Image 1 (cartoon, rainbow, N blue to C red):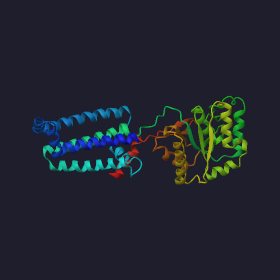
Image 2 (image 1 turned 120 degrees about the vertical axis):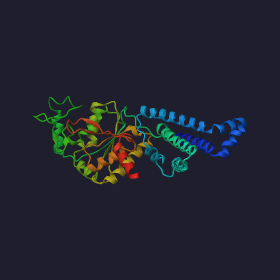
Image 3 (image 1 turned 90 degrees about the vertical axis):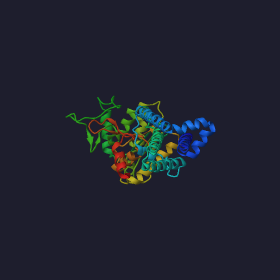
Image 4 (image 1 turned 30 degrees about the vertical axis):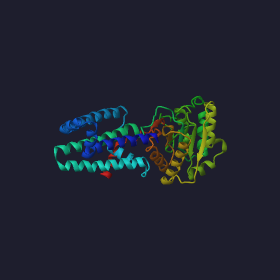
Length: 360
């Protein structure tokens, strides 16, 4: 809330400067109230005052641009224009921003239409203030990309369909020599050195559930909670497994065995939605995210592992990862290792370009 108030105060200051600067009545009244001599000097050198203002605005734009580059923020005017809504179209700061932008565009057009040297300077100054405000918003008020250097605290993933025979076979092979001491990072290979798979999924101690184990290893069991999204089909499949090899028990046993000092809660999320329904799974994932926001977790604390889910669930995860600049990962198809999904609301330029085309 404090951030939005500061943003509004800066906008208010710019509007006041513009009212004083472009309204003769206000401008001369204030200047003459300070000093009549200064008022005469100001009127006689008004053009130079405007040129000086433009120079200051240009310097400010270059300075703010350098800060944007250091912050690794890509500046698109559309970012400010869209983000000005502040998530809710009826938010007072968002409405003020939109009104400022639209009014400024109208005023700039009018000044340039007049074509006089003085009016062109007015238009340039108005445009400069609009650009400076948008850059200040991008640097100080729009949410920055998540800090991805810290280990995530919440893992959200989905359960795959799994057969008891394959799972038992995988667990048995893992416990045999010489593999039993390699539980942490074992990737199984065929005799021709290719990665062993079960269908489209990598072989491992948990068969096609193994990306969950690998996420735990890669992040050194940093998770406070692991959420297992269980579709209607996956729930039916897992219910057929014996209790000792159900996913929740597998994870608990693994953590107790290799990370005894880590306390991780395993949570099953099952709302009866089919794994082929992207919209409903998106609603379910959003409810999970909101539940952690209420617990004061930040977006950078949340990690998605999209491996093993249906296309619909994986797609829903990706869509929910982009807006908050949350993190996502998957098991790489050639090696089975865990790879980050390169998601960033600032780096997906093709998405922005397409958006610009649609609104333009």
